[in-house]
Each structure stands twice: as C-alpha cells, then as structure tokens.
Amino acid sequence: MKVICTGISGSGKLDYLKQAVDEAGRLGEEIHLYNVGDLMFKKAEELECPTSPEKILDLAPSSLTALRAAVFEEILKEAEKVEHCIISTHGCFRWKNNLMPAFDVHYLNELQPDLYITVIDSVLNVSKRLDRSPAWKGHLSLKDILTWRDEEIFVTKMMASFQRKPFFVVAVGQPPTSIYNLMFRPEITKAYLSYPITLMIDDTEKMHEVREFRDRLREHFEVFDPLAVEDTELTCEAEGLQGTNNELLLSRLGENFCLTDDEQAKIEDQTVIRDYMLIDQSDIVVVYYPTDKTSPGVLCEIIYGSTNNKEVYAVFKERVSPFLKFHCTKVFADAEDFFDYLKESGKIPLKQGVSTPGNS
Image (tube, rainbow, N blue to C red):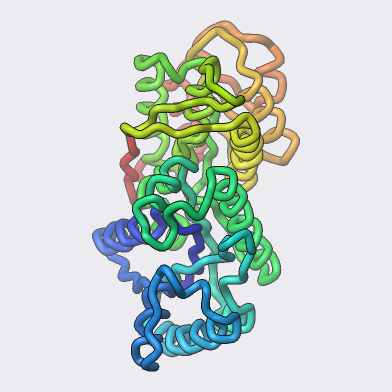
C-alpha cells in the first residue's frame, strides 16, 4: 500500500502522520514514512549545495525540480523494498503571491500510489503554526491560507482522479486511526456525522452527548466529524462580534486575530463545500439531532446526501419539522434504536476488529 499525503505548511500534517504510523504499528502494520521536504534538505547537503527552509522556495524552478527528482528517485527505490509507505509532500506552494507546483507527475505515475489523502486543519491553527516558523512568519494572510488550503485539496484531488485512485480529506482533529482504516480497512463503512453545530455550539451538555454518540459510532464505522476542523466553530464565535474597519476581533488560544468580512465569508463558503466533500467521500450520512430547533445546515446535508445516492439515517430525539425527515432513509427515536437496527440489519457485526477512540 502506497499513499501520497499532501497538506499545506502549518497544517500539522507531519505530526499527525507520525501519530498515524505509531497507531498502525500498535495495530500490527508497519508503515514507512517519507517526508519529501526533509529529504530535499538532506539531498541538497549531500550535493554540497545546502539550502534552508527560508530560501528553498526562492531557488530557480529548474533547481527545485532537479532536487525533487533526485529525492523521488530514491523514494521509488525504497518504496519497492517495503510493503507499506506514506509519502508526505505538497500538492502546490503559495509563495510570494505565486502558485508553484510541488510534485512531478512523472514520478507519481512511476510510484502508482494506491491512495491520496490531503490533511487539513483550521485556518487559525495553521496561522499560529506558520507564525512560529521563520520561513513563513508574516508571509500569508488568513485569506492566503484559506486559498492555499483550497488549492492543495483541488490539486491532489485532480491527481487522484487522473490516476483513478481514491481520495480523502482528513482533518488532524480526526483520530490517527483514520489513516489506518483508510489504508488497511477499505471495506469499513464511512459515515458523515451531521448535527446542528450552530444551534448547540455553546450547549456543553448537548455537545458532550453528540461526542458520546460519535465515539460509539466510531466503534463500528470510520466517522468524519465536521467539527474536526474548527473553522465552523470559528464562524459561530464570530457572529455578533463588533470590530473596526469591518474586522471581527477574535480571541483564540490566548492570541488575537483579525477576521475581515471577506475572510469570514470565505470560511463560511469553504465550510459548506468541505462538509459536502466529506459526504461525498462517505458511504452513509448519520444525523444526530438532540434539539427541537430547525437547523438549515443539517437539512441541507440531509438533502445533499439523499440526492447523491447516500443512505441517510437520523436520530431525532425531539419533535422536528417533517422537512428534516422527508429525505431520510430511516428515522429513529433514540440512539439505542439506531444501534439495534444496525445490528439486526447486519450493517455492523456483533464483533468488530478495531475500536477507534474518539477525540474530545
């Protein structure tokens, strides 16, 4: 199994992949991780033309291409000797207002990966990591980061489509076992969990209830949680805040950030598009609805899933609009009824191989 894993700088991709490799080892599978960036710096030193993170993207395009080619030649040789590997790289770079390619299609064709993954994180988490990096500090605005993240997903998805390989977007907020499941358990049912985030984000008790349901679901399925990327939470927090010059001042993790109206709109648009993408890469949609208030977002996700050939199962604990129920495959009064149905219908076996702990 060979996996190409992309993600923009500051996404937390490498740390997440190291956790995934460790988790796979615990579950009995050895994965070799090749980080193209580190290998390029090492190769530059071997060739006696060392460079630095601050300067590497300023190299002539021909020099970057040659350096990357030398690294991929070595990866190709190493990948033939191992059973499973992940190649951590970029789809593209956004540097000095310029979009730059970050891989050579020739070598991806030579490698013939089995799976493509793009690792993402919230825009503020990415911004904080980049600000701690001498190479990136001060280079990218929040809007630049949002644009680059979108481009990284797009480029990787297009390459996967060109090679007719599976593609997934995975947030660092997902358990590291998500990588294991995608690599070694392709048959596992993939479920998108839909719930009224905006209505409940400040309700600690109900959010805890949703997380408990999610973690129980993860004992049987690979669950994609929209809150694994905190951008949704960010837009909820931004609502109602006042700022100057059309800016919203947010305090997050002890630091202040200015979020312009344009950036907020871009985050909101990307949130909708990303959640639809998570539904696209899932087999089913599972709705957990512990409130009697109507959520436009959940309604849209139900309709999107239903009209895109997904089975939609919903747990409605309160009385809700029939419009929410109309597009559902089956509706349940509580979680116990739902899990009993899954067992009785054979959608989950009585015993499952891997239990995936959830993230709080």
